Image (cartoon, rainbow, N blue to C red; front, side):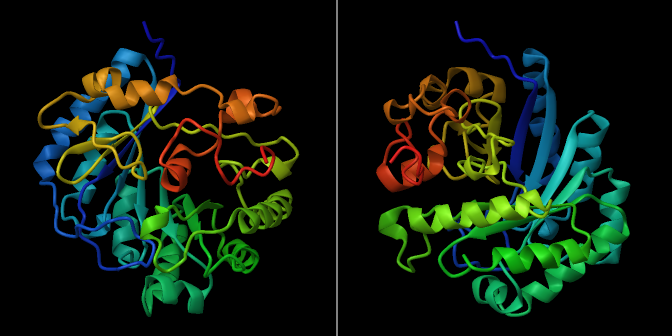
Length: 326
């Protein structure tokens, strides 16, 4: 029998697929799905049942699409807060003004994550003209309200040299945290050649490690900890203490792994987490053969399953961007 020994569990709910931007690297192909606000009681109740069964704390991250396009966002956050859940909002930031920031504070949101993919010229080339200025205005509004503000940088070929400048800019803005991850696009779909090469990712990790020592960049993602002198180690949560719900109710182990394990309108979250064959297979992945001699193996356990799957069609082997395993 499996041992579900979790301290924390994260549920990421895409309450809508509607979005006001069309980013080059977006993995979304449906911009119409929209969950009704009344579904929140079902989602949060099922999440609470899962947390009670495992005896762990819960975080509900609300995203989209663009969650600020959903009229029920603030009611959902208030309901989650009333159930004792920590809450976060993952957004492009362009729809956050003073009023929205005040509402988010009133809802007791624990943090807001805004996507910035470089300075203005590069960011706008990826996310659309004027999106950088609007996102920065949103950051100002959030920081004015004292809301913990995290910046997410999606590293790809057309912005790989932007991290250092962005780190200084975020520090000047008073941002609480800047972190980055690799763009993940299956090789056959990467028509714009956005995916970093393994060498470029290694160089970016070294840059990030230097910035981490200055307190400017958080490197707690897959493989990024390697040049950080062992301070940070990461383990992929897919199959374990993470679940994703899409706007139509479909449930996934990770938004960037293309597996639907069920639908919350037909099955309980707890049942899907425990009994889905995909979830069981993900949990059963041990340390890949190519990682067994690595000193990080027991924690890292092979790196990022979603990127490995995108590049190789498998998630049970060593992350192809790992430069220790080569």
